[in-house]
Length: 155
Image (cartoon, rainbow, N blue to C red):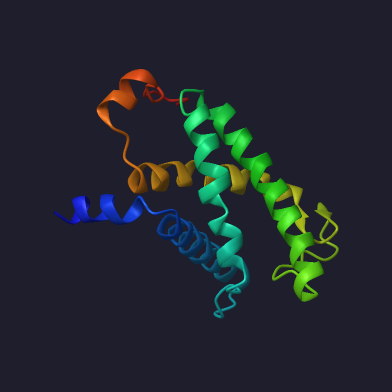
């Protein structure tokens, strides 16, 4: 019953946008706390940035879901860095600053992305696969036409 209700609600783009935004914001807040001990949550400006997973991540995941884990992870990591950089630049123009600032970190690019975070973004993308599949369950005919990855150590 709950799953059926979730299926109906999650079909709406706005609900999925908010689900990705909230999930990303929560993970970001936990990461910041684990890394710095800062108890203040991440900026709410990050919610729409993570919400971009709805229009950007979902179609990519649908196209590459049959690929090997390493390929999917690389696509998600590089894609996330690109979105983080572009959204950071846009936020700087719109509100005067990005809610994150990597400053002069060794592998920072314009203070907006850190290349050394690439492995973390790959894991985040793989986690989003599970969220996407929960929010948008595939029908049986979709699974037959486009099967998911074969279970195994690298899938």
